Image (cartoon, rainbow, N blue to C red; front, top):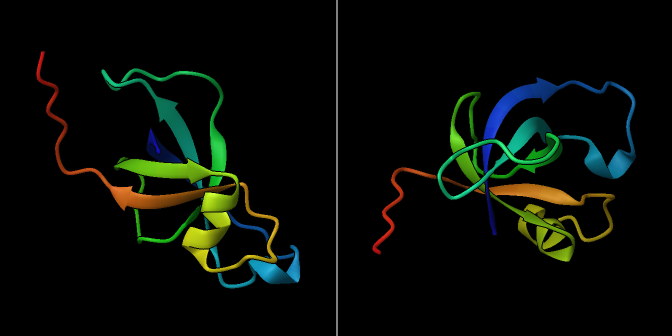
Length: 89
């Protein structure tokens, strides 16, 4: 799993039929100290995340399993909304 922050939404009226009914969110990957890393990605939202929320996301086959759409062209899915992060050193 990875940390990210939802920074926007994507609306696509024409898309693969297996994506119909999915909510697409623009997600900025984050480091463990919540700093942006890399380029934003598009993720299918499976938990009702909103813009500005820190989320957990998965990539690859795990994302299709999370969305319960094994025949879909999904490479990334939001699977959790983060309430708190505690790192013990």
